Image 1 (tube, rainbow, N blue to C red):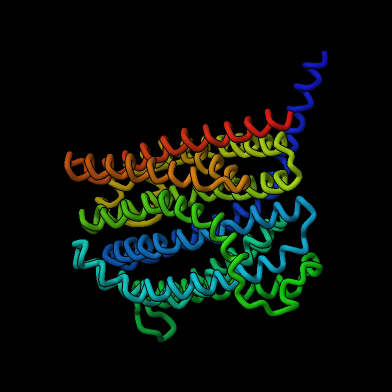
Image 2: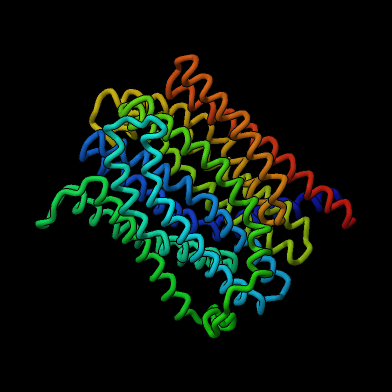
Length: 457
């Protein structure tokens, strides 16, 4: 009877945790979907402008996000650190941490601006199709002006998320999308008396959207009574290396891990450019749909990190385990839906992006590969989120390096280029890397929690 009672209690607690995680994640999912829709809008506008424009934006976007992943991954250390301080009752430490994170964000933005200034020179070195290079260069030079806004936005967003406050992310992400769609269309096609700017117009529209989101979040934080006691902007702090160093110790492995996974996808996109504009365009369509679907598990994962970090502050490892399994249960259900949509509606989804028959045929087939990696992708993102919440980041980083770059990328290159499978071979490499990462990260997360639970008992 006692065992049955305990089992029922555990199920109720798990359902309760799933409800809490869902409520916390829902605004994040909307925010992430809005962010992914930015790439969707860019791709749709570019695809209807010209196939070469779509290919240019595909390559340029890949190069941009490849550079952004590492520094934004560093800023992802903010939610688990803030949630742990909140859970342990040390809220007075949050304001000083945030002000140092702002300095870190400014430094990151400066590096990104310089990179995007000189990155177009790499396009010729890697043997990019000459048809793609001019548009990609124009997009990168335009979007670089939005980097400070982007980094400051993520810094403020991660602070709020660490405090279980996720609605501002949703509203401001929707605002950014609402700005990008009309402005991007006008600048790309040259309406309202403006010249047609093609890919450059999309770059400027994206930069404007980033700044509007950042300024909007700043206004929210300044006017919020919810965060008034944290005194976020009540004093000026010069950079303090001990605090920044602690952020980097936790955040750099996260950044490398994010870079390893994201780099697998972005490098694949760049390599597609060597196969030609058709292959690159088809890949961009498939990866855009997959990215849009991934925003759901990503939002759940960020909520899981916050829940784990808060429980860590209370030294409640049973709650940490519930948080991980709640995240996994939610994500596996949503991934089933995503995979089904990709399988049953692959042609219809591809037709939203382009009217080119050859592009549609290849993109539709690639969406079937995207459906295949939905489940391992969901498992790896929740497992990684749990480990971030535990501030266990170094070993997971090496697991990601091994999975994505010693298995996934070599398999993709071998099949895609040496065995003549082209884009399909590259996508098989993506599936292999994600599956191995899911196995390794989930094994470590469960082992870490089990070890702490046995120590506590």
